[in-house]
Amino acid sequence: MASSRKSSRSRTRAGDLAARVATQIGEIVRPSDRVVLGLSGGVDSVVLLDCLRRAARGRRLRLSALHVNHQLSPNAARWAAFCRRLCGAHGIPFVSVKVKVARGDSLEAAARAARYAVFARQDCDFVALAHHRDDQVETLFLQLLRGAGVKGLAAMPLVRKAEGGRRKANGASPITHHPSPAILRPLLDVTRQEILEYAKKRKLKWIEDESNQDVYFQRNFLRHEIFPAIARRFPAYRATVARSARHLAEAARLLEEVAAADGAGQIEGGALAVEALRRLPPARARNLLRHFLAGHGVNPPGAGRLEEALRQALGAKQDARVRVDLGGFELHRFQGRLHVVQRVPPVCKDYARRWRGERTLALPELGGVLAMTPSRGQGVSLDRLRGGTVTIRVRRGGERLQPDCHRPRRSLKNLLQEERVPPWRRGHLPLIFCGEELVWAGGVGMDCKYQATGVEPSIRPAWSTGAEGVAAVTRRPAR
Image 1 (cartoon, rainbow, N blue to C red):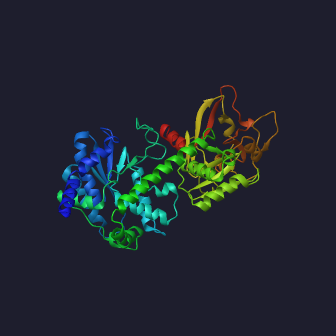
Image 2: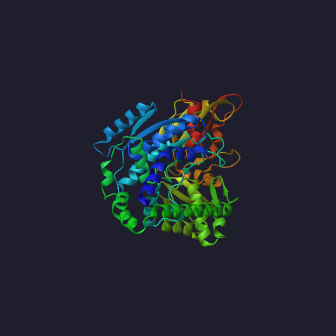
Image 3: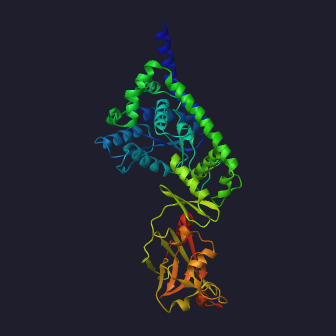
């Protein structure tokens, strides 16, 4: 009798799954939002496609699907074709993207990084993924075995906002300056068994990835070797571990609130005051530093690396250069503040770029765009520039400049220090030369000898980096 009731409950849960998904996303996804489903072709994503397709009818959601082809299996092309046919049968827009997965210590991690890089480029409001409760439990165990902190053990959230905050905190209008979509996981409270029951009831078809049986991969080892043994002794482990993940997520949010309070008024221009860390107890100082780094898109550093960053920030001499390697980023201390800087390759000292009258010069080696705006009587005199070949270079050492005609010529090094240009930027600043004479230096200004007067034709150089530089190229193409 008990078995019959259990079977009946399972059928009911499977039948209601589409309604549960619709309810789950009801307060998150607005009518007319663009939702892109990450469709692998496996049973999880096929079920989510079916649920979202049914939910979209009444909510006017703009649903499409994306298949990321990792090119790791001999069956990869067949899987992409299956997904294309499935979406075609239901009139759902579909695209398949091939990626190259870097070979390294963890193929799983490399494939995930490649996949999420594709997700981040999608022009939509949400990327919906089919992670479920069993995935959540696996994630928590893996993070635990890696020694993760509270935030890592909180595993996966229902919604992960895009870096930089695509949406306002209250879920109102999108912030247009950041193109990355939020990640949405509507099946997090659904078990793998419920998904299979739904798929069978709806007579859905899906593909099986042969690698899912290979216990060489960490998730598969837990799934096939460890969890069956746990289930025999603790049948409800999925629900209880998922509950623990929710508790940890709550604790992580509280730590974020503490960090935000500790850092209030201490972060200006993206830089954190060292004194804000110095006056905190060690645990809260680490928490604030971790929060500050995360705000710049830095993956949470290990405990040892975080401790080293804090030690250097607080303990190095006042005039010492602090630089901590954080993978793709570096942490610098300058003028009593900590700065997170994206790592860029050094520029060869022989770097030179000829100027032939262009309005803008994209200088990717230097990380920005040099605008040369035509003017009259302001900026650099074009007549004086005709005396030699005009080139864009970088510091080689020994350069001198005279920005003020009432003061002597001075070394560029001293001028950069006086203008408080951070050391990590100095090697990537463009310098305009006429022949062998330094005319203008980014971050400092021009030599008074080349100053335009009256109404004579001139140019006004301006250096911009990052997104600002890209926008400059978009607004004003080089001629």
